[in-house]
Length: 333
Image (tube, rainbow, N blue to C red):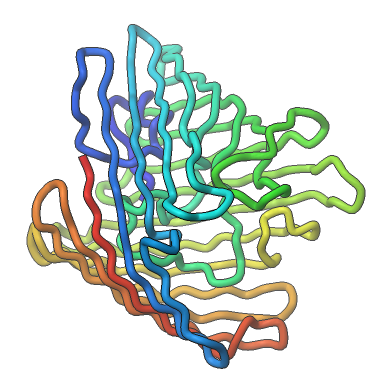
């Protein structure tokens, strides 16, 4: 769901940016952004029910502003995000990169950007639900710094990149890599196919050989496909796998999968139904069911709700089951 904009070359480099309604400053610069706020309840069994609201700085609360620019063959973006009252992660510069259009479908990018892996977006305004499909396995990287080469035509796009790390082992933050370019550089790439009308197929990979005692190689792969049956129905499926004996990703080794159906009734009312699961190397598994309706008041404001139920099994599972309820307001410009 990390969609693109502009031409094919620019689409490859900007594919991970949210699709906001830009406000033009001039012919070269534009600004866009969003703010989201939510109230959510999580009820594990056994365990105590917890409430997350704006005052507690939950992961569904954030404000993001993005400035994009272009000049001749160059384009770039700088974006920052704020999380209210979340210790250690109050604010951060996320996107900060420059792209050069080399012609013939090729572009070169350097700086900091969001990993292209993952069907579900990093940005709240670009999600179709509040929570993510994964419950125990975290195989999708976040932000990192480096350089990448993109190629795109009307049917295919290909990307290969060298980055500082797939995951940040120091704080397990998805908002940044480890900031070091030594023996522990990482590689990430993907291939996207859109040669069949209304069908998108994505295959991505990541590899890192960390530099440090006891740290072993990390491999991650991600395969997803989505198909727009008609103007009302969209279906999708994804499977991602990570082999991470050193737990740099902050999650268990194993795989995560999802199946997804979205129905759009009209310009105001839509909803999704999702079934997802995790299977870890410890034998713990999770099966999650999610329903999420959205009401769009206008181009700038929408309200979303979610009810999810997750059933766990295995000795290493965090609980027997967990129920999640949430409601979220989203404003974008």
